Image (cartoon, rainbow, N blue to C red; front, top):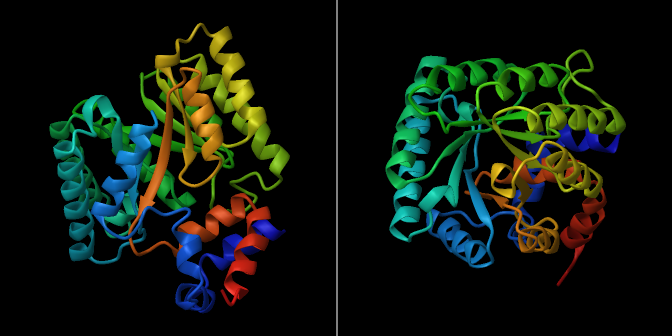
Amino acid sequence: MLRRTLLAASASPRLRQLIVTAPQTRGIVESYVAGETAADAVRVTRALRASGLLVSLDYLGEDTTDEAQAAGVVDEYVKLLGMLSADGLTSGGAAEVSVKPTAVGLTLDAGLARENIVHIAAAAREAGTTVTLDAEHYDAIEPTLRIAKALRGEFPDLGCVVQAALRRTEADCRELAGHGTRVRLCKGAYSEPETVAFRARGDVDRSYARCLKVLMNGSGYPMLATHDPRLIEITSSLAMLAGRSPESLEYQMLYGIRPGEQRRLANTGAKVRVYVPYGGDWYGYLVRRLAERPRNLGFFLRSLGSKN
């Protein structure tokens, strides 16, 4: 119930205004968001790479309803990729970018979104790195996967994201696993109706484990996005059973969450990528992170109420 309440709050304009304007919010946000500019993103990437961690950068924003705004998002990604490359951070895909299709026009027109994704993917290829298409709300899933499929021939390393919370995802994993595709498996951070999504945490976890097994036994490159110690242990066991080398998969975790575990895994020889968001449109992202880990809510609310 608390998780559903928080997810609903992510779409509340009144609550957004309250939290965004609270003077104590900035310090909390900086724990989970790199900053507002590409320079901030590069600075954080540099520090994470120095710790032996890989990085995926997300310029925050989604559901763009204006072509000029979508073009601005593309320009931001191209600029970011150029800065990362100039700093020597993109070699071998060490720092890549994650793109929300609705941020580059999917809500307006799938053709526009595809053109914009091609532009970003071409800039990433020139920089020596990759792009992953983020998962979003349910209505965006099918058109996003269609775009990924259509561009696979031109950009074979274009990755996509699937959400274990959705009932369709195990079937999607079976299709994607046969194409050698880069697939990020996450639990999901959107509030969807029970007709299309599992609502109970246990059902989501079991779906994740089923999808994980499919991906690990396929020919693709699984990217396992979870902070759950049980699922991390299951991933390690399945990798061993499938005969996978550490280079054939990676773990992914969010910036600011369990950084000690990120370093511990990396120190074992595993590939660990940190998902790093940046930009001014951080509200929806932050509330969804709280929904994923409700125990953080008390800390956040205490911080908002602090006079220090």
